[in-house]
Image 1: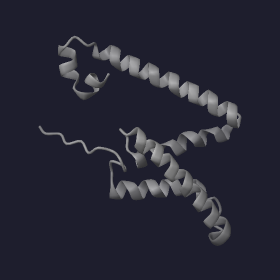
Image 2: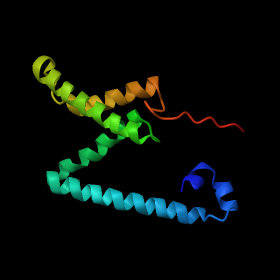
Image 3: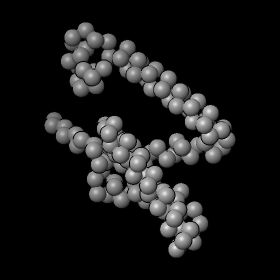
Image 4: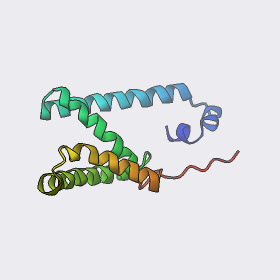
Length: 128
């Protein structure tokens, strides 16, 4: 999988089936996602509010960096703390309503302006 992700042409020339590797990667992703959905559904119950977990994942992954697992973990912690701080500030001082629901997206916009690859993402340099 790593060889195919790094350079598909070289992996194919070494006899690795690129289509099979991609199919296996998607299958593993689907199984892990289904398992995570079952666990979250069992813990929190299944309702229409469950869709907000999927929406909150986007700022977390972009904040941490698309290709960094440590960045995704740190991004999740940062977004969680940011949501709690926004809820506290909103309830005590601002009284705007549901500021904690949009605070991660404000952080997403700010991080995309400062570091478009995320905190731990690697900048891809492509030479033609």
